Image 1 (cartoon, rainbow, N blue to C red):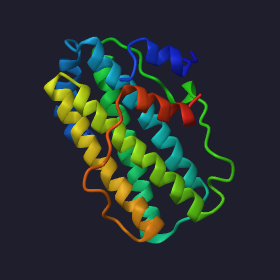
Image 2 (cartoon, one colour; image 1 turned 180 degrees about the vertical axis):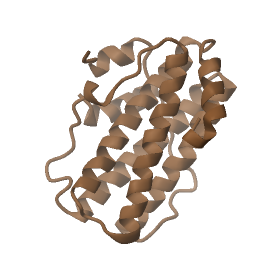
Image 3 (cartoon, rainbow, N blue to C red; image 1 turned 90 degrees about the vertical axis):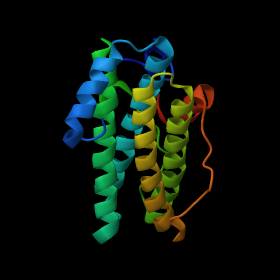
Length: 196
């Protein structure tokens, strides 16, 4: 079943970590049954973020633009995004909510985005900045303490990804002292740029 982005997010809009943390994922799935509409909306939007992130890292790796440590870091980032997706997906499943799948969206990356290292990394910095901002906004908006903790932990991982990409882009792995957070409307506008 194809779910269009607007319909999926309208259901509750805009809204654990590793397989080794099975206890956290299980606890999250149990807690999900009691989540309110606002928390479920935050979970929905970050699922869309994770699908976009996985699509980006898959395309970068398929383009074979990087070798050595850079390629290893990008592969690890893809692995992280897939685990984030499963973790938040389990929260939605535990609340008997649909979980968006990779085929539910068309990914609108700019033309030639994966034609050179420089262009791909610049796009990656833009995307990871948006991913981090979306998670920070979700931490701010979520009311459930488990969800806040899960989103905060994932935000830390997204910040690591941004650091890797910033180093590849401008040889600077430490960035802003206070990254911007994106509220639901800004996160939605960010996703609208890349998901249809």
